Image 1 (tube, rainbow, N blue to C red):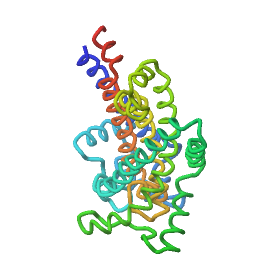
Image 2: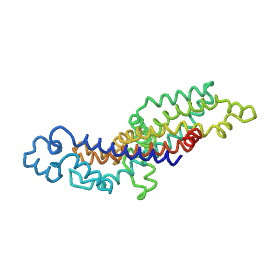
Image 3: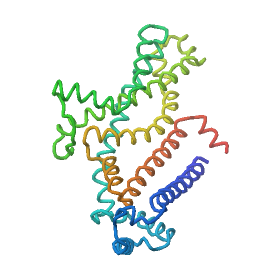
Image 4: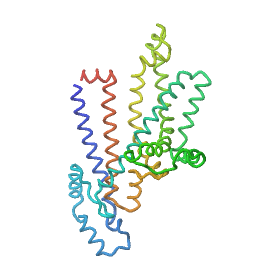
Length: 319
């Protein structure tokens, strides 16, 4: 029965990916007027517009162009850019790795901040120290990632000169330089996301410590921390999984802004450059990658959620 449910989820994922690709293509191609005029500008002559449309196949029916583009995407051919005639996938892949590092490390360090901070705030909620921890996490929610990034640059790069203010060094070229260049941008993302996740951890821990089985564990001699680690970890993880899946999209958006703050040539920076150049083929390729990544990650979270939640396991077995 679990395999049947997984199959249904896979079908739903495939449908979602196709619908997303169609919407992205329509938004970037079904614009009022001529795409050639959008790309070339209003000063382009009719001859230049006609030559551009002929060169890029823009005179063909919209749905035909969509299916040709989709078939190309399935085999790794995202087309060629309007500006420069470069391979779209070749423009995306080198920068995708940089953005992936930012998002993954940002989420990992956000969890490193959120789990102890949220647990401490919940276990000490009736003490001043717990109130201070809750206040700290609440204050972090009101700070935009780019604002945190600018202050980190001012303190650690400009004043203390401990870390570089921006740029990126590939891991293969210089591991130490790679770490030092990622510390501030990752910290900017992690501080804000960690504050948000800490609120969810606090709520989950309070809910767990209010359960009858937790009080029973305390009655037989377990400490609060020991009972929480031994019996409450799975329940807290279940609560966090859904939130983490939803926050991936937020982290992707935050990474785009952080790349601008720290002059990192990631996928977000390339997307903004493509928008400014009106390179619609590159824009739709980058947006497709980002949207598909969010859909796949949420699919994985749903599968893992069902795997770790015994109540959903039983429901799947019964069905």
